[in-house]
Length: 240
Image (cartoon, rainbow, N blue to C red; front, top):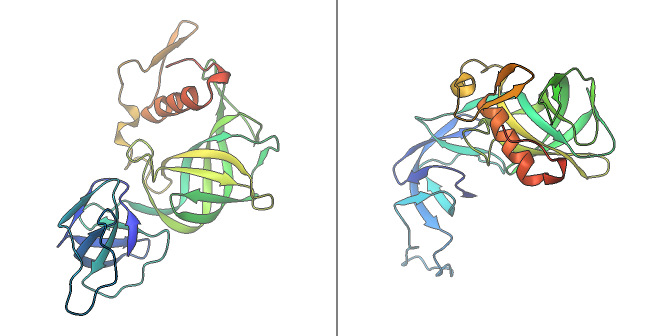
């Protein structure tokens, strides 16, 4: 099986679990794509292998058991399994002139997974200057909001603050194939209150004063602020 390590490491002999199927096996061998001699070998030769691979290496692994693994599946160590869910809480940046509408179908691309998703609720949208939370039933161009989304199948969930690669996604219009938004996973709905334990922890520099009151921001909001300032400087978003 071929793939790219998004975080951590994997070694020969590790017990692994495939998500979302929950099938298990053990790593038999690892071949790094950095190894140059990838010519076909005869039955008397062996392919050069390595014992351990680290992020962000692209590798090929063989397993002790014949199990079905599809494109977009996630292979994780069996002693460190993320949640699997089809209902997510996320922060979304909308980047299209056509508004985001609730209960309409969109294509969600997360890492190598391509799935259908429907936005169910908009909990609030953010004023990018004051970070005030506003009510909304649709998202317009450049809006930033906390939403809930339902997927047509379950995926392994990594919050963005734990894994930026598997915790982020883009939103694609299924009719025009245009990228219309980007998102950061906060948590699975089932796992809220269990994962993301640092969301209420005060972080140095996390306060921004609005009027006379000090506003405390979660780690996810701080990450979103950094993302916006880096990728959308024209919005002139303040640092929090």
